[in-house]
Length: 299
Image (cartoon, rainbow, N blue to C red):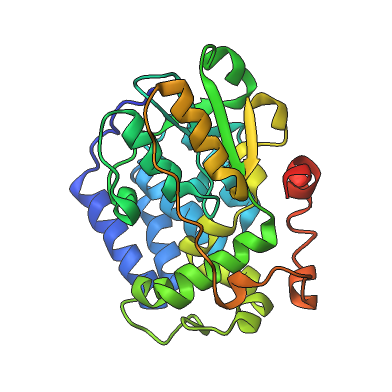
């Protein structure tokens, strides 16, 4: 699904969106939504609709947000991962190599940084480590209803991970180590009543609130099925994160390149837990049930 650059937003639309984002950042979400709705009375620009959907999610008006996203995303310019997942549309992002006919479907906290770098090497570029995400990824939007036909001749690969392991990894790697919530709020200690440096128990206890307030949380903790659908059979290879080097070896053989294995990173903190789930983690199981149903054989 090739996209054309969006129609340039008018100065009024840009001003409205910028002001609304600043209002939200200053914890005036109601005023931000009112301003966006006022702007939509005179403009139908997708930038305002996408911002409205984001604000509706904050106010737990998920059905309304979903209706907006389903209408505008097929023609949108590089939708966010959370937008695709929330819309429920049968659309996934994929990275396609220019050479070797490999299609990789990225999911956050599922070796995505390692595989982004491997895909760059397959195309003759250079690995950039964590900085690989700073580049504009040449994602393709793949309609899963005709994925086999669209990617005929490609090797479609997907790496998955148990939902609780993904949550643990996100909390430890992104909240604790990198301070993403503090960074996203320009150094605030709390945002809409939520600590930006929560304990793991506090994070789990307020999991829905963190997901609706911080898009970085949503992007990293949306169910796998939101990104990859509920039919594992449309992929040629599916593996767990523990099989990442197995996949890299297969891609090395396919391409004839000597691709580097990733280091076995020993996770610390909550991400390093391996046995059992706490009561708070057990409470998330229903939210991720479709993941267990679709990809549980790989967890």
